[in-house]
Length: 279
Image (cartoon, rainbow, N blue to C red; front, side, top):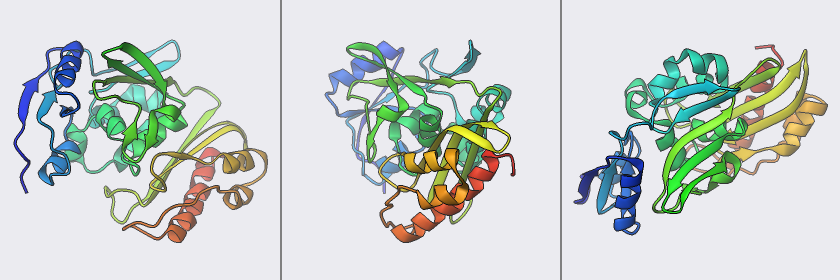
């Protein structure tokens, strides 16, 4: 299929993009990498009256590490994150996730802001940001604001972004000494959407863990923290954490809910081994 007719505008600045979105009263869409948007346009699942292209807006891409904080501009391409020495050193969870995101052709164009704003429940980066306790910077008609990643995702493809908002950057603490990360996912083929995935961050000393954050994707309408399992993994054992998994996945075209629950336990064991230094 081909998309329905739409107009096109190339934004000159973030304020210009906000103005264009406001002029079309919810009938405009931002074009970043376009790796999800173009597909939904072609299937006519999305039919905006206007595409607002933000690829030429200065200052929306790039990676900076300052004062123990990593900041990534919304238009930063996946491939840039994948190849960045700063990300490898200061954000190893993101580095571990990147090779699992689709295929090289997609990563060459896709952006972190596009992935986060689209909020696909099977996407890797939203779960990583929740695990990292990240913040999301948003510019809109009312000015600028910052939202915690845990509050940003509201439901199935729903976020804290309003009709006239532009996601400009994400920010999270740099991973330092004593902080460990883990990441794993299961997909039918490498690059496919994950049936189940898990992103994790914890403080570690030897085999002992504390401040554990376990965030699943592919098991609900948005990234899912499993707080009972977090407490069990920090205080007792992997087996106890698996027994405490507070998940109720719904069946979908990938797998039944029971299969997803089983796979969540498999991934927890694998990621726990990463956190404890056994993998």
